[in-house]
Structures are given as C-alpha cells and as structure tokens.
Amino acid sequence: MNNKVILVSIDGMRPDGLTACGHPFVKELREKSSYSMNASSMVPSITLPCHLSMFYGVTPQRHGVTTNTFTPFVRPLNGICEQLSAIGKKCAAFYNWEPMRHVWNSDCMKYSSYIEAYEEENSDLLLTEQLLALMQSRKPDFLYCYLVETDSKGGHDHGWMSEEYIKQLYNAVDCAQKIYRAMPSEYSLIITADHGGHDRTHGDTCPEDMTIPMFFLGNAFEPGRKLENISLLDLAPTIASLTGAACVREWEGRSLT
Ligand SMILES: [Zn+2]
Image: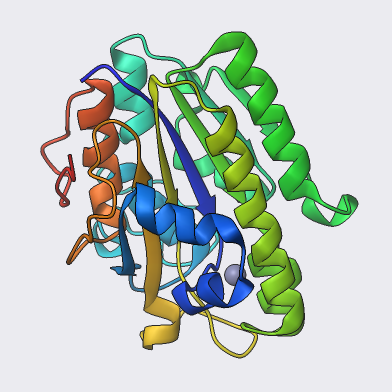
C-alpha cells in the first residue's frame, strides 16, 4: 500500500476512561474503525519504554530501555521512522514531553515540534493545530502526534479516572476528532495509548495499567471490526504495511491490515 499515516498517542488513556468521558467521537470511532478496547501495553507500562516498543517493534526486554531515561540500544535496530526515511518518505512529529525525541533517529524526522506542556494551558490542542497546518501545507507521509496532558495534568496530578483526568481525556479525544475531520482520504489514522494507570501512577502489570484502547481508521480497515490479541508491537508492522515501508526482521508484532 502507499497510504499516509497519522499516529495519535494519548498518554495514559484507559478504555474505561474513554467510555466515561462521554465524547461523541468515541461512539463514531467504534462504528468506523477496526479497534480493540483491550489491547496490551508493554512491561514495564512506562511512557518511554512503551513508545520505543511502538516505534521499534520489540519489547522493552529487547530494546533494553525500562525507565524514562533513554540509554542507547545494546543491539541497534531500525524503527518505523528509519524504515520510512529509507524509502524517501517524510516524517513529522508533534510532542509535549521532551524525551519523546528518542523514539526516532533525528536524521529521519523531517519536521518536528516540541511544546512544554506545563508552559501552556492546552498544549495538546496547540500541537494538534500545528499538525493540521503541516498536514495541509506539506502532506507528510507519516505524522506522529503525542498528547501528554491526560497522563500528566490528569492522571499524575489528580488520579486516574478523577474528574480532571476525564476532562483532559475528553480534550485529547477532541484533538483526535479534529485530526480525523481534516484528514485527506490518502491518510489512515491510528489512535492508541501507551499504557493506562491507577491511583496517581502506572508501571505495574495490573490490568488498569496494561489495558489500552486502539483504533484504526481509513480505507484499509473494516469499520466496526473488533481486533483480538493486539499490542503496541503491532503498530510498526501495520504502519509499514500501510505506507509500503519494509518490515524489520527483528520486529515482533504483526500487521493488522
Ligand atoms: Zn505517566
């Protein structure tokens, strides 16, 4: 396939939080996407290890990063951005948590924007607006949108499933809806979380931390189809399949197309 892809990662989004937030786009997502409300995070269920697994297609045990402090891989391998760049595809990233820049090699990121979440009232929305502008002007092949505020300003500051968490999640879903509404037909949209959370933390193996929702929208995906036994490891192979990039032998997941 020669599709373009937008990947939206809503940090700390729990499936039951998504249902509880009451945003009308959640119902539309279930109807129009292939999806799972019980996809699997990684162990440990921590932001940087999980995102490295998303982008590099291997477990934290294999890439070796098990905290939010990046360390170079003992056995380097290519991730999805490296594979896209290798065939001349253009990647763009929008993020509001600084260590996120470790999930791609800087050589293969054509455009990027970082906003410090606590310096803005609604950095998720600012990033979304930047993404929409670049999508319209440059039409990159892969757009990555990382939204931290559900995790930081919701879960960690007030508790998972707290009123403020639900409010932040509603806002992130609103951002995802704006992207979906503006998305040209050559794009597929993937919406995922990295992990869930409980109390004011995450990183354990409990279901609240490990269970995440994932949605796949676009021509390649059957509307309303429930996907079984999927995990963060399936994202890199799926994005490769959609865009025509080659999979990497070490990748442990499978394409969902
Ligand atoms: Zn967190």
